Amino acid sequence: MSVSRGGNTTLDLQPLLESDDGSREQEEKMGGSGGASLLNGSGSKELSHREREDSALFVKKIGSALFYGMSSFMITVVNKTVLTSYHFPSFLFLSLGQLTASIVVLGVGKRLKLVNFPPLQRNTFSKIFPLPLIFLGNMMFGLGGTKTLSLPMFAALRRFSILMTMLLELKILGLRPSNAVQVSVYAMIGGALLAASDDLSFNMRGYIYVMITNALTASNGVYVKKKLDTSEIGKYGLMYYNSLFMFLPALALNYVTGDLDQALNFGQWNDSVFVLQFLLSCVMGFILSYSTILCTQFNSALTTTIVGCLKNICVTYLGMFIGGDYVFSWLNCIGINISVLASLLYTYVTFRRKRAPDKQDHLPSTRGENV
Image 1 (spheres, rainbow, N blue to C red):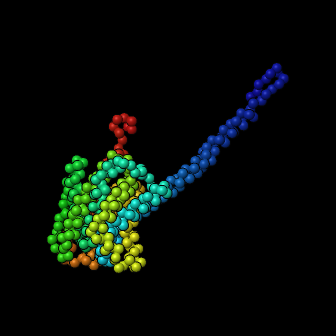
Image 2 (image 1 turned 135 degrees about the vertical axis):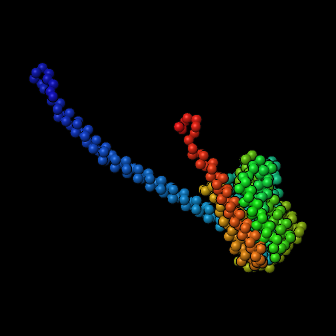
Image 3 (image 1 turned 30 degrees about the vertical axis):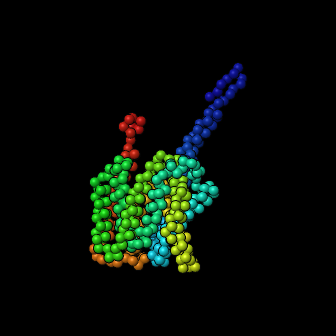
């Protein structure tokens, strides 16, 4: 193709057009081969990055669940060892040590900006009342029950707290459990009653302590949920101020009952192994609360429930050999096993109930925007 101007000057555009066509063909080839390789390269990088993130999240999930399970198991075993194996005279003094550890750990954590909660104000106590009283009573009577009962019976009787929580949720929060949940809870209670009917190491004081602990645990669960929904103090604030407000009453109770003198005059304070386990018991209260939050954060409340159930099974069976205060009988053993199996049924029923809303969340909306 040529364009003539004045007959003498001719401009040939054919080479330019051929060059243009050639470059276009080159780009098409690049788009078909080289471009695809570039896209594949970036896609593989993106995929590998996502795989690394998924792997890191998986490690956090497994690690937090194991951390919670070990913490929950260890605090029960360590408390039992300190109070029963070493015959430490005062569970009240041990509860005072746990209060002190919570105050120190959370106070230092806030100063180092590892945790955050609002400063103390005049109305802080009124905002969280009656949680401090429930918190202190739960800790003291729980340690008292751990000291006076064998771990299998303690774990079996502690399942009464599920029944009490269910009744309180129905009364206060208006939450009605399903029939399957009710059946599993009643089976747990039936197994615990069967085990108690032939408990050869029966201790009335221990039974009273555990039943009071169950009532306080149920009240604590309901009121904590209520306070977290209506207060800006948060979980760490509740833990810190519960311990802070109850420290002086716990110290006064130790002094009045004479437990303070008994504990300070205990003959094993020169035993480094005992001191280590006592200090471990003091800080385990905070560690248990923190591990519960961590497990729920990286997994779910359902996973925390399952891990807690597995921990209770370990406590039940290992408790037959730890502490040296479990007396075997067939009826007692059968009742304990019924309670354990019912707790597994409860976990399964809870799993099914909580899975249903998750599936519904992924269904397309019927209002048109996702159809």
